[in-house]
Length: 118
Image 1: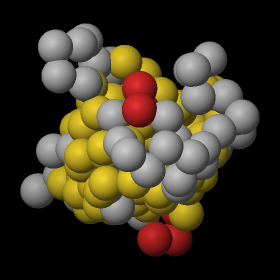
Image 2: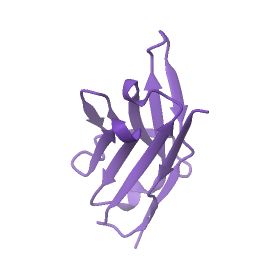
Image 3: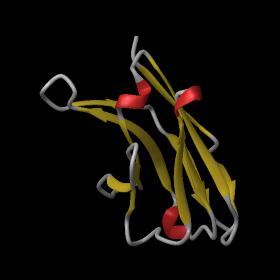
């Protein structure tokens, strides 16, 4: 019954903005580290941003342009993407991580497509 559902993807011109959302269910959301990954065709999946209860981290390629945030009351994590570039084109995936059980556990969403093109 664990589900992560991404939304907010679409087609945008270079320099534009999108806001991705990931709604989680079936987990104690506040205890999980949440991350956004992306994967372009023919490329490996890469970590874009991570948020815990105390910190955020970003890939160098998106620093200053993307902002990750979370709303524990809504069991949701967001990725605000500004000044988008064609190289940001990818399927974006939400991931929940926890080791509260004493070992790592990961849950993944199905992804949402982001296309940056003129």
